[in-house]
Length: 227
Ligand SMILES: [Mg+2]
Image (cartoon, rainbow, N blue to C red; front, side, top):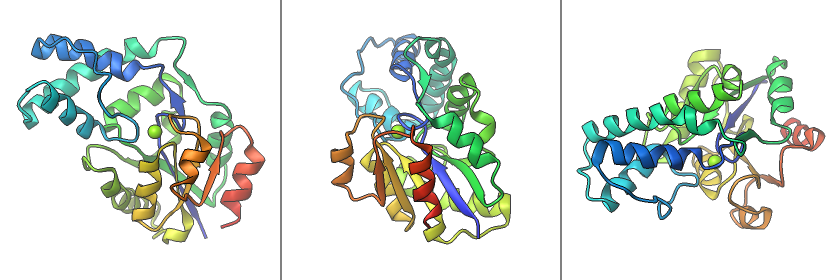
């Protein structure tokens, strides 16, 4: 029996030191002539599509597919420069876990993230982590995070030929939205307090398990392998 690990990116695998917001600001100015701090937007656990829509509504920009694609291009163009900052780094323990999982034939790992695929690739490639993930579900698939799970399961089936039962799927993320999204497909959920939420705040949402970080590989594998 194989197990599927579905990883969130921001606050779970990496932290970007605010690079995302700092890329969104100049793109908003260059493309729409609007100067805004964008610190009043709800980012954590939200999809890029949902974040863009919030910005459009807040600043009176017509919420069209054309504007979405223009803003996305502008954002992606600014992202690499902003990721080159000392506060953007891979979270502790992550490279060890990803490398160990990649060596195990009984595990498949992929992404389940609110990033659009292009942003996920830029962020993870910056840290040399992109090649760990042969597929994923992204904001390209849906604006709503809870809709992403079925896309991840379908791609898992296409890539591996395995129909993963929910009990052999782990959704790993740093926000209550990740927990809800895992629950929506009946998956097990591992919450990690390396993003914007504490262990106690995450525990309130009753994930299958919660860890303060991913530094304790033995604790991580005890959870995963207990399934
Ligand atoms: Mg996250």
